[in-house]
Image (cartoon, rainbow, N blue to C red; front, side):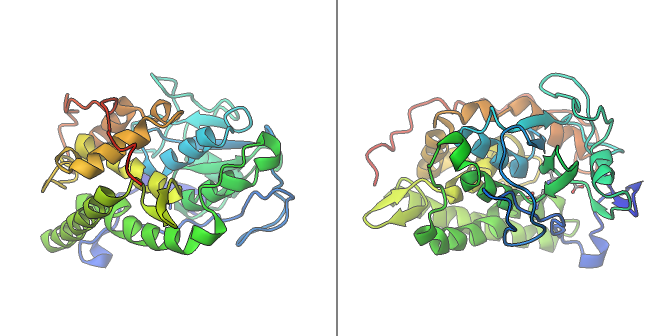
Length: 330
Ligand SMILES: N[C@@H](CCC(=O)N[C@@H](CS)C(=O)NCC(=O)O)C(=O)O
């Protein structure tokens, strides 16, 4: 694990000293947008028109942020239009690495050894963390975006004329509600598990822990009354907010509960939330984006300051194909 400084790789763990033991996630730096006609999006440069075969995703199957983009690629019928490279689950001295072990693809585009070479191919003197997901433009040979929250918004609509898939997971009139739910879910759950797991001072861990479980209580109540997170009139509808939450919840019992010490309760212990996770998992196209061998291997093997023996636990036994019983909820 490390970062690039002026294009040079430095093997360095997160610096929590500067924040008194708290884990602080760096903001993504590369923020252009693919749009239907190539006009500029809300940030970054213009010139990224939606085209079949032009763009490529670099992902880790372990990573919850990258997982969002894989789900949107499936749901929006983009699998035949946007290629994917999958890094090794082991993120060690060189950061994300390419190999062709089980479930990993290597880098068919450039035959790179490491993900940081994709970042320096984009900008030779890049300074910053080397994160996945990355949306790559094969035509201009550059990174369009390394921010998953924005990549899924692009995938949600920019390619609609190419795929004919008009399903909208972020309708304009629901956006304020979606953004509001996302805000709490991001800080206390998606990033909350990392704040608990990567804290190096007890009080920072405990603060993240208590916010996380307060938010799970809030979700349990909400999801007892409605099938999905966001309401449109008298019923709830499946939106981006659900998919953003899903990628954390599906990893929770296998990884965050033990490895990140988020162990007040398992997701299995929440009747509504656990049914909700199974409901989303069983949505067509989603199960094939979930890979527990990469998920468990990545966290337990890569974070050796948390798990120095690198032993990957065998359990827990999880069955997301069990009936969810949520069809009748509005
Ligand atoms: N804001 C980014 C965060 C992505 C991110 O932090 N990904 C993790 C993998 S789970 C990563 O690549 N970490 C490597 C590092 O921080 O050096 C997004 O949502 O796209």
